[in-house]
Length: 142
Image (cartoon, rainbow, N blue to C red; front, top):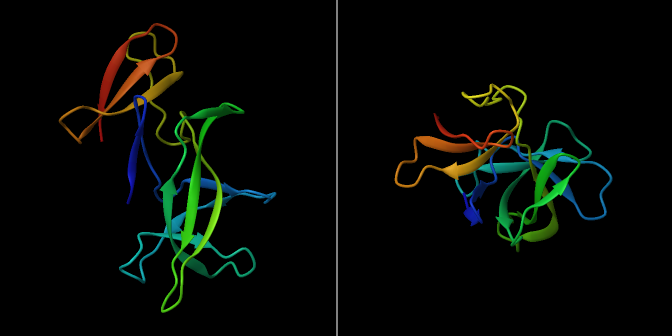
């Protein structure tokens, strides 16, 4: 999967990433593609709930933008073709700073208002965070 650094943020489309295509009124959550080795992600079919299309997400944005308390970035969705050309669509991928199950809290003030600053340099086992209230920096083992 493609990893892109924008400022201090390290972005990667993964299972559970919310994507909204241009001109669409609803969002889709990327799912795991476990049936084809050319792709790790799949785009859920908008009509048939039991189907999904193998895809790749290319992060094309150069900046993160805030939208309703979430960060978003421009992406290109590539629906992989099997013996035919791939199809492309463009839209937004949303990255929430407060995941429902993985809420990180500042160890100094115990607030959940923290920003993930990306992978800790030189060690992929830790994510670096910064508290938006007190400025405390801390790492979390993943």
